[in-house]
Length: 80
Image (cartoon, rainbow, N blue to C red; front, top):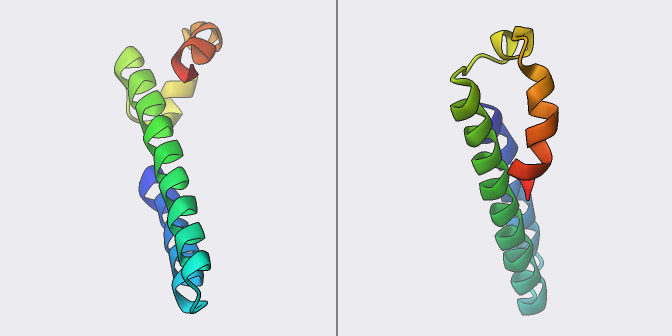
């Protein structure tokens, strides 16, 4: 649900470029949308790798685990 809500931000970028009636603005909007999608894919992979590491989908249960300190060590490795 978090990733679905986060990806809704893509549509205003595309609509602003399309409604400007300029080819350069439309190309800029497409470029911005492509960058946004690439960052969303990277974020999704990072989140899914953390979920696979802890085998827990619920954020509440995730933060109550005692191994949360290990995540602080693995976050820089996962993000790179």
